[in-house]
Length: 436
Image 1 (spheres, rainbow, N blue to C red):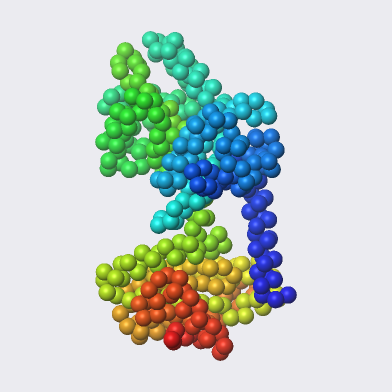
Image 2: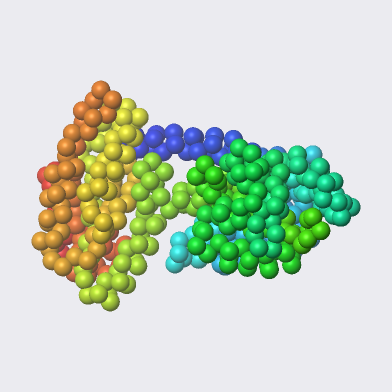
């Protein structure tokens, strides 16, 4: 088995794992690519396929080919908004599935580099039918019983959503059982009497920020995301819906709080995976190119140099072949960690794939600076790696290209560093600068 075949097998193994994880997610996930002024379906998980009644038929089709004209006119502008602004868009709508009509909350996440047009939109749809029914029922109950504080208490006390009522100054005057749990308290008296600001993560601007939300949210009944600090010190993300009520004969604010920490973390994980290597957590090639491009623009202003270093682990294939891919993966993670620890704060590492890595060094004044960094890296990176019962020694070959002498674009610098690496690998365990 040659190195390319080994890497190919490893790639298929990881793709199989990712596919199983993707299809195990209960939310419906549709991946679309920008197609002119529309969007074309290119991927969907099993939950999404079930919702559309045979998802194989949607692959390669546009929104207009799958959805009704009414649905297209409703959701297409939201896709366009996500693509144009490169920001997450959240909306709710009703869809018809083989099991009936449901209410869904959809999160559109654009996948794109900062300086590139958006090409991919990931739509994550969650069935919130039951939640909307509860919200609707709560709203109907409020309309019928808003004049009776005691009856109001009985109605909201055992709701699943956390209910927090506070006066216009922000002092909490009522919480239900779910709110006690949400805020990490043991009993109601731990919360009632405190100002709502106490439970906001950013306390410095909390009163001003919350009042701004009051003015906006109270007028349009619009939910917003707030970072809350529980009494046990844990930070959570909560979706907050504010409304004006009368409590104890006085004007008050009712907040319906719902923990959305899992959703927010999931969205951030999707964004992280788009720009980072899933094994080592280092920036991937796409993010690295963007960082190098920005650094070149900065270097033009500061008149300082940059260097791109291309690293290859010598004989890494032997580790996979003799010790197995699990040990190989552990070695790559340990290597990446040690690499990051030994390049300094003014450098950016990247894993391209396999056993190949890149490093960007900034603010380089002279060639001797680079050689000093490389020598230190050689010394520390070759200390033996103890993984399980194995002690593994690693050597590396390095190619180096310098801005602006060897190239003025990210791809040119990487290509020249790769050419220098080719020369270094002839001898192995050595480094070479690019020579024209």
